Amino acid sequence: MAFDLDRFNAAWRRYTEALTKQHPAFMSYFATGATLAQIAETERTIGSVLPPDVRHLLSLHNGAEAQVLPGWELFSTERIVREWRIWEELRREEFKPDGLTCDPEGPIHGDEWWRLTWIPITGDGGGNHLCADMEPAAGGNVGQIITMWHDDSVRGLIAPSLTEFIEMIAAKVESGAMTWDDEWGGVYEPAGYG
Image (cartoon, rainbow, N blue to C red):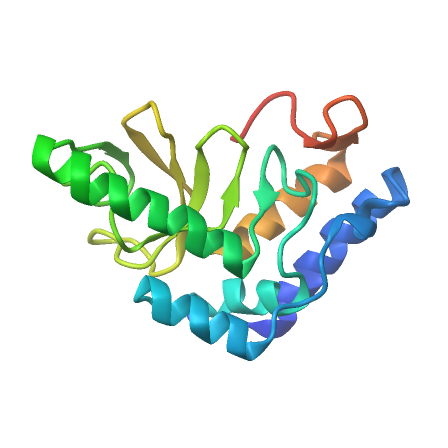
């Protein structure tokens, strides 16, 4: 699927405008955009070119301070590299030698606990991530968004792309199914994904 800049921008605008209506300070949690050099250095370090929609979001906002996505903090380029390196070391020193695999739900490779081509773009503060899957199994989309749980073997497909994930959560905020929660300190969806 080719990246559609207008489609992404429309979804992002819907999402941020709906949340700003609920929480006027919402946009203050976002950092300024990453430079092309920062994005390129991230890609060199992790050995993967990021999906165009992830690159574009990073160029708008190089991370955020709060859980600006439902239950997830948006990572900066530096944080992507830091988290990827943690997982790479665990893969090399523990997961591969122990033969750990995962349980994919959808077009996701299950031969490893974590793959080098799963790029962590968000985190929940507890070692769990949404990842851009740069090497999906048959029937998947490069850049599809998947779950990566540190203590659960299930790897689930959340959306075929970041753009479609943003469209999905924008619709939920607009419908009231997802809101900003001051006590939670971020965007919250009581019912969870689905």
